Image (cartoon, rainbow, N blue to C red; front, side):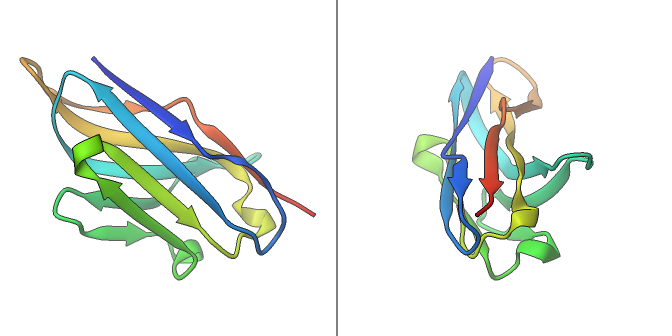
Length: 120
């Protein structure tokens, strides 16, 4: 099995920065896809940013130029550097990974989420 744990959320003022981390652990053979999603109050969950094993990244338009996704393959960890935060970035942020496990199929796994609140 695979465990996915996010950290780094919190309360920050508009214009501030936060860095989210997400570590995957367990019987992992490889991870192709790692992504950050968010779900704001009364909204559907949306993809914020993603990165694949080759390093290609993808961002939702609303965060381009402000957020940066990166990964450390040796640690099975993905990061989300969030700068110039806005109140509309307030949401629970979830990590999603697509992992191949030893003696098992490739599957996707979700973390429990970390709250990010942007408010003065």
